[in-house]
Length: 166
Image (cartoon, rainbow, N blue to C red; front, side):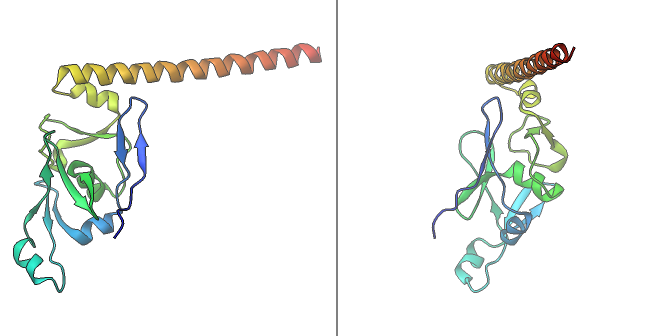
């Protein structure tokens, strides 16, 4: 089966996240414990080997960053984002921040949906935090400059129209 590539979302500061699968797809593969922030494999009908070895077992793995990932249809997703989607029914609007700073603590009470700049302010690693905050501030200033330029252009047009009518 070919690997389906999920759509991506890019924030102005450079963070890229995968669009998450529907809640039904998540719950068809895993039982989710929101209080513990953990995923457990569901049994697969007709696959006794799988059920004997994996069904009911803890799902997810880390790959050096401290975050837990879970694969759905061979695509890795960060567990904290999946937990948020299962609990709230929609993709996070921003990034998911671990309130206590512990990256593998995916309990729902420890997660909040914030913009990347807020997440950067709460980050434990100061260098990366400062870099994300700097990138977010630059993106915000650029956006503000574009808005102001557009406003000046519209005011100039209105002034020209008003003077032409007089």
